[in-house]
Length: 113
Image 1 (spheres, rainbow, N blue to C red):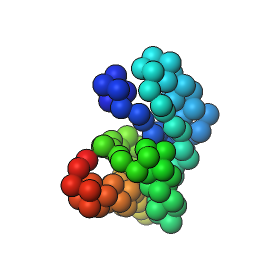
Image 2: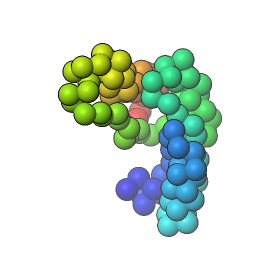
Image 3: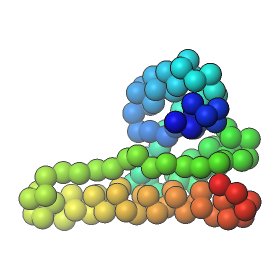
Image 4: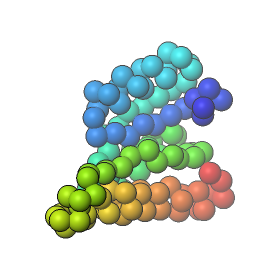
């Protein structure tokens, strides 16, 4: 929807082949710049560099962000194996907070976004 409105897009994904394919499709269909970057939700130490790369690709002015990632295993497995439960929490909660806070701080600093 944002690309259809003329906004450039920066995509982040674990699967870079799929991300590049999606980026190419959006470029062709919408005629806007689209960048594909590697992103791993539970690699918290990489989030600052990912945000900086997004900012660079967007010429310093990011207008918005959307989160579309997650992890879900069978509930019974997560109840029996804390490592699975923890990965669910790290990806679906901590990962979102970690990356979204960087964007939110930038929006607040600029008074826009």
